[in-house]
Length: 457
Image (cartoon, rainbow, N blue to C red; front, side, top):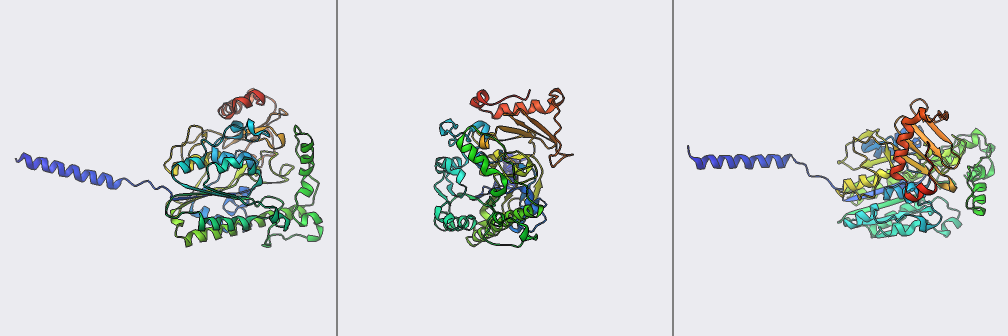
């Protein structure tokens, strides 16, 4: 036999093998454009994709149907500042202490931030933000964004326009036309303030079906502060920076409550309408198919389910269960994921899409990973609240550090969190308390450990 022929055939077979193998390997898709959209104060259960019956979110529902919907996503806090920083920094307020009144007490935030990681990877970073609480750490955002603008103006409120949704969209569209570069990579953070109170939607979509004459004059303008008791707490806090309490609302009728909820729903509907305008613009620019869109919220809102209005003071699901949707046309297969996801997982997930290693300072992980077993952590320090808690798929534990109160709920039997099962028997709940303290150990900074943390046991 001709050995040269044998060698040739062997080489040919090996070459064909390499072609087959290389052909089977799919190129990893990296999003050219990323739109991270935060809708303030949007509780998950007021969206159709999460089971809400009112037709208030057709655009969001469509993106959820065609994208990946996370049904068990939870914010790290029930207030804006603590929650939003965790989106970008992937640490909770127990670690970064962003709630501190003295900025010098805050752990440096910017080195490991999502925006800085993307900027270093040559993404053009843009942001349009409308929540005034984020003004406290404006330098943190501006440090990582090439183009950054707050949509907050005295003129806007002097004109009696509290809802800034249209203005946010107008500014975002202007950024798309002037500061967005379709030929390169872009990361765009858009933060809508509404449906935050005082619930003053610019358009009436007809959701209220009650009796207007039974509503107090102040409620007609959507001022939930008129009955929430929040103003009284804030006034005491201004006089005494150490003051801490939970507001006591003024009793209102079911009709008046439904009116406030309808105003809240109407603002959600108007944000959804504006999202459709944004998506339409992406289509017109021929960049939608190259765009990864993430929709979420910083926290939810209470409507007396546990005795309060608004948010920040408590850690029930109405304030920490948030929507989370990932949409990427023709790239992400439509599915519904039920695994527990935290706000600290958003930054590592985005970096994973971009094939960028998350820095070691980030405590979250890829939300799409199927081997996630660790429980999630959340907290609130709003008006000197010192509450932190842990959630698994079945259990929820919340500890009030100030009062020593512990609450434990069986979420499978009691999803509305009405029956506190903790009876003071620590040994009987060690299967929850020990993982909780282990989780705290991962998140709590040394300073917090020394000054504030009180172990359950």
